[in-house]
Image: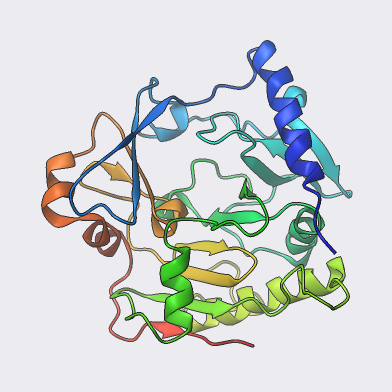
Length: 297
């Protein structure tokens, strides 16, 4: 059984409509070539820096209420699917809670249920920034999806992550937890997993990886003990414990650990050329000599 990308197509259609009324503000960027950048993709921001990337960030909550012209669909009673107002890629999607829930709190089974509803139809690179120190621009809970076509590579570092899981790549020198997805949404020759099963799988992985990284447990900790980034696609699940949000003028969120970097007016490109993108990630992640690579089946 294949996914049809209905949400993705709806997002592209909604994007055209939102552009017409000025609700969508795509960011203009250019890819920069540089020595030692591979496999990272480095883009330079050509547009005016949006509020969410400026120091301090915006004060109003843009999700209460959200802009109706950015809504793609509703996801049950608790969540809604929106367009990212400032996308680099067309069709960049957000899964947000309809009522206030803190970005810095634990992700809940209901959040994973909303993700599973989208996953059943549209795949790609999912990511979550737990708080400002992990690159979150808004305090209202939102997970993000960059849709991808079936069979395509989700992000530049995906091959490195799969190679680590296969024991063919050395571990990264910072605190992270990496594992395989237990229930890929599409399994050849088998019945497609239910949304309930996928939501349970993701919640299980989330709690196991959080425990590995010393983030605590939702049953005993009111909120995670440390900032973190979360990324996953159909094949792997990654959590990175964070120490700080920026280095050398680069603002780093989860996409940095996917292999995407964005240079703005304050970014020190000479530093990046001298030290390289891997060092940039190392500077913002929590140091560790005992990273966890979980081979979950």
